[in-house]
Image (cartoon, rainbow, N blue to C red; front, side, top):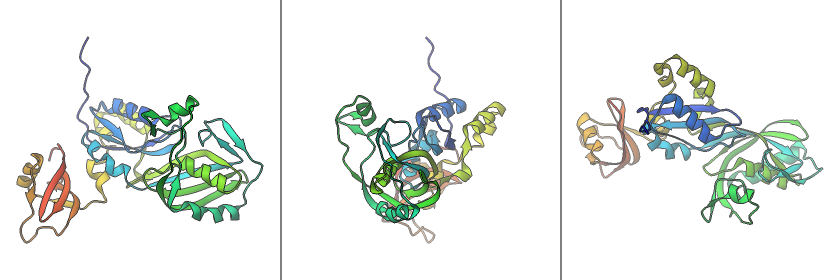
Length: 306
């Protein structure tokens, strides 16, 4: 039996506009196959029901995934009133119903309760672990378990449209760990009418937006053309680090950093910066790290050609 091919060294971010019905894992697998990439990962799972921004990291970009995952996210979603489901979206069986429907003023008045730092109980059908098992596996097996509430941050929650009495389209800016399905469920409960997600789209993950996203069809078309067309769809590895200061260093210092050694920032032109930064040399990302007491200390080193 022959050895499995390891794939090619592909480095960069693909900002995929994930289609409905595809899991995040399958989206990564499909694009990794198209790129024949040795290594790939993603920044923030999207449910199969959801569409939108799924940043996929190839190669050295996987080292920057935590920065993308920790970035603020924007979602546009539709809440259907009148029913709660076991999955908090349309894929689950209905568990409760209500004849009540909120009017626009009631919805508007309820939104401030769901902004800022709030307590949220994650959906039972989620990937969180309970005593080593995934919550969604326990839920499917009808096991009894409780998920504790946790603090999440919602910076903005606004009504986009109310097409009819049964549905309301909202947009939210939120932080890491927020479940929009839980937000729809809790809003329905607060309005005493019950509710669940009927449509969900992520429009932003950190600095990754719809403006720089490509569809799976775009990637497949580029793969049919040539490898240069495929590579042209990628964003640089450092795209996920836009919130950090960039530090320009010499080639000699870059060589030291690649060996995991710290470098002193000396001279009249030494940057006045402390805390997390990333270092570049000749336009190429070299390392992630921190500046303290006039010294850059690497925590992550990148193997990218200058």
